[in-house]
Length: 222
Length: 224
Image (cartoon, rainbow over all chains, first blue to last red; front, side, top):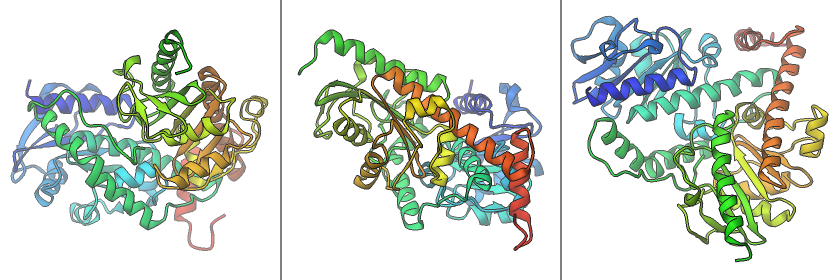
């Protein structure tokens, strides 16, 4: 089996195991500059097979694949996308509000805030500017990354931060990490200890030979 | 070294099992948590940094000096949170095992920086009173370490602001009992707050969803 397809199947199962999927989730990975492998529209991640993953030219796609294709066209730094409907993200997407930096791991992995975009690709691209995740009004979330592992981790961290944000409505407002510290953590995460990991993971997801042991996280480990 | 090889081997297995148990009990996500167990007055075994708990072997656990956690030997590179484990072990000679993790319900209270009142007899017995919140500090900083040590005074657990929870016991079994009761008590607190806010008598996640959406979408000045 193609290594990229295998990676997509593996991470689809991980998302199912973590209970952060619904019925119409889609995940994809860039292949070369102008192509992507993507789960077929309508295919359920719970029952995904090799035949449900297709390779498309990002400049020649049908409407149902447009969100992924347009993000890849616009953002050459993005190599993988998860479009999911995690349980705790949904009420925030419905309310259409922004999640502030409620937890260290959110500030590091998702970013200092996560905004809700209108449900159209222009707004999504605009909301994703300088970020790798956003919520989509009345829908779920779109996360992206240098690797599928990074996009997948974003889904988990975003769902946890969302749970904290939603529960804060009854236990007392979240005390937000200040903007400078949140941005500093994000900067360190992106430039220091995750960079080498992502380079190795990227090679691994694409089936290249990599060293057995990935470099461990350094200071700032969450 | 003031410990024998047999004890070390046994404790290496204890710490390996602790990582797997955290995963199995859904008390940790991925590699984002760490545990430590005391070997003697000035040494402890800790989990290595950023590595998969299932794949780790007992031999991978490094020995860290409590009085100067920058010094370590054997095993793989220790967790960067070792300074907090060491500070607690140094301040509290009766503590022999520590757990730092980010289970969901503890994380919720940590993110709101709310002191958890005593929710049940088990919490009083195991934690020793209300669970405080340590001052916020960036991961790996002295401020975070000192805030955690201060919040742990006279307690066996504390929240780390916007981060997670820290638990300490006389052994790893007790440290596990503490993190379990903390997670259970936090959930109980959130449920009680939801029922109080909504005026309902039975908790469901949907009740919390609806309350949140109503709060966030209410016209300004009409929030409850």
